Length: 410
Image (cartoon, rainbow, N blue to C red; front, side, top):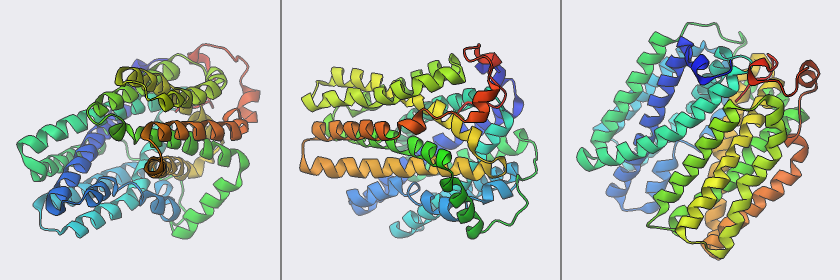
């Protein structure tokens, strides 16, 4: 597969993509509506923030206990069942019959299993797009994720202003129902990757195997740490420019999308490997200039350039998929994704704590410096290429369409 057109020619990918975009729009609207609803009920910024991020942090619990389910349940059944459960959960929130603590607890409980559904979705993507197609598919998903988050925030804000938070939650429930329908009609029934019993012990044992492999462990840290620290810097956009934070967030999204398109579409696996270190460095260096408190237009330009560096993860995720065992692929990909979300939350919390003791621009520069230090410490993993894949690739700089069949893109 050489082009996005060839990827979209696969009917099941179109279905998976359609379900994913509807799900992201729904989740973004849900987060915004629930946070607004909780703040209106309590007047507490802390509870409003907790309601907004309630579904993120519990995913770490799912990664440690339930992630083996991603390889034990047939993919279509897993996705459709979870979409229907979320339809019911959001409908219950929309009814307004639960107290605030119960709403937050319910969303947090869903976050535990959301890690499993996400792992199943990404593993199915790898099944549908072997070889060169995987990077193209992940690039498309990254682009769609950024675009649908922006659309979700814009649409969610419009819904909140017209039909209120309860109405916005009903729309979200409808989006989850649409996602379930798309996945049910568009995906083919497949057997699970493993017939072993799914237990917390099985999840833990598989995680131990993954962490016990030096190459896998290093690639996990590369996916989690450098970008998590930069997300911490992004979390300070609002205090840095309260009246222009939207412009800064938009610049970050635009830079990230451009990087995904260019690096994902027009580079070979070996070229992505050579670009990995420069891209990770680019992700952090522009933020060092924030120590001088640049004006908003300059800050937006710096953020745009830096966010192009997120494309370095395409190479890391590609090589990660090449080294994980296929029978635990769902769990391995879920562990990587859950760890990224967790470290982003940790990065945001760390940046906020640093900003309490120093100026916001200085805190942003500190987070960037920490990202650079981590990148240097992880250089062996950033540059790592699986020996078997390197031995089998005879044409290093061949066009994208002639990449080795075992080199999967993210």
